Image 1 (cartoon, helix red, strand yellow):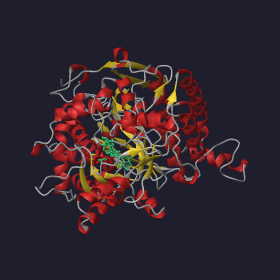
Image 2 (cartoon, protein in one colour; image 1 turned 135 degrees about the vertical axis):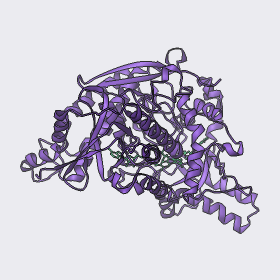
Image 3 (cartoon, rainbow, N blue to C red; image 1 turned 90 degrees about the vertical axis):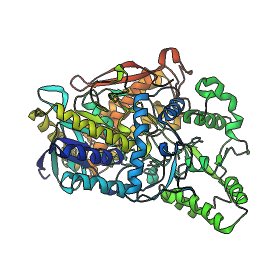
Length: 624
Ligand code: SFD
Ligand code: AMP
């Protein structure tokens, strides 16, 4: 095995992840850092131009207030998010994004992102919060601005950040990060006074619908493996709402999003017998008051209705694209030009953001104007930017955060100098692409302010750096050592590969942690057994073998997902309540319990003792 070389990179601010939040952080931090000559570096595991959840593009910007046209105010958005999250949001964070998000979207347009317009020059709305874009090149546009702001010399691509480093004199303070190149045998040690964690959410912690050759065909980005959570957990940062998750309705097998179909085309979800799911199960919502009585129906409760209908044996479920499009065609009196426009919007929805769905429809001879398409619920994802709020417990903004939520710098975690943004921040859902970018900007500006106030040098423990460097390439060594025991790489008495480990993790999560295969239900004994199995897997992970650098990346991605899985299970065990039916059910606590659980769950992993401590933090309503 070749000995990897090490490069040490000195900077002031390190941004981990070059997705939406990372690019926002880069653009903003670079601006404020200039005055003091601070160096801002961004590290990305892929290539910033096409990385992260927006790599393929998007067909809508799902978080836009439209304040310049008086469409919505930040207060309205707080009410919406509160309702959708069944009462529990960090409203200071939600408000903060809402008041700044429009300016981010206006910059995207200035940089060349085409946004649909109405006849009077407004952005065309798909729904109350969503605007439609021709967004195939959304990510390259945002990436270009970030790269220009930072300078090419400050962007490190194809490097996977695996560990954060803490200050040798103060274990509550950040000092940098370590990563490795996914192309060359090379380790990077980044030394920084502030670190912004913006490495996306976590997919494939659970067994997806498609396995075998279709394993990577999921809705959220398969390369978002939960690094953002693992990095912060292992650094001892407090995490919140790690029991929360996202389960959404998606077109079957292609995982095409449904928002545009529901909101713009007014398509209706019906069961195999032509019954409207939402109408048929309207009474079910009364069991979940007050949230069940509000509008819109919270995302988990929409799922809950669909699950109930499925359990009654009424599947498959179909989104009636045929009826919706025919109704729209009738409205334009079958004018061929207008008809083509509607059709082209319908196809562009997928061609801009989930091409596989358009390909699947084409290959199955599906004309959405003539036949309906099957819809199913996804496996769970851990993320903080869609209708879910998993992530770090961070300080809110100085001017509006209540005292319980403020400790100095906006979006700083409980580790000093460590900031988070996008999927990495918990308790503040519905940011989507634009809100994640905006949160990156907020974290970027705050990180510069933190360094202005804390200019003194930090230094990582040199023994720790050596320990991490040794661990990083260990899976290659395991492979070399164990290879003679077998004639076939993947089958070995003393080692196993990343894919085998991933499948084992997904099986545990699906069966014990309320995965889609288990009907999204679990209870304390099941979770406890799941944790036992998870710990057995952890013990075996020291025998992970990687045959090349690509597998080495996959091996470390298994560790990311492992930590996400453990945090998720522990939080679910802690919250003795079913708060979000349709996301998951605690069979032993099947009801909403506002008296005891209208609060945030918070965990801290002590890396020294390998111990998790869970606690509650209060929910504070910001706006009546
Ligand atoms: O409707 C490391 N999203 C949508 N947002 C919208 O605004 N409109 C839509 O139409 C959206 N839809 C949608 C969306 C996503 C996907 C996949 C589809 C459809 C098919 C959601 C947004 O995309 C999402 O909210 C934001 O992108 C979140 O931002 P952020 O920055 O938290 O995550 P990221 O953009 O994925 O970036 C993460 C980056 O980190 C890198 N990375 N780098 C170094 N080291 C490591 N260890 C790393 N681990 C990860 C990643 O490569 C990436 O670049 S709809 O369906 O919801
Ligand atoms: P999706 O395409 O499902 O990711 O959703 C895109 C946007 O539309 C998000 O803001 C969703 O919360 C919203 N959305 C999707 N379906 C519905 C629905 N049936 N009712 C209200 N909002 C929805």
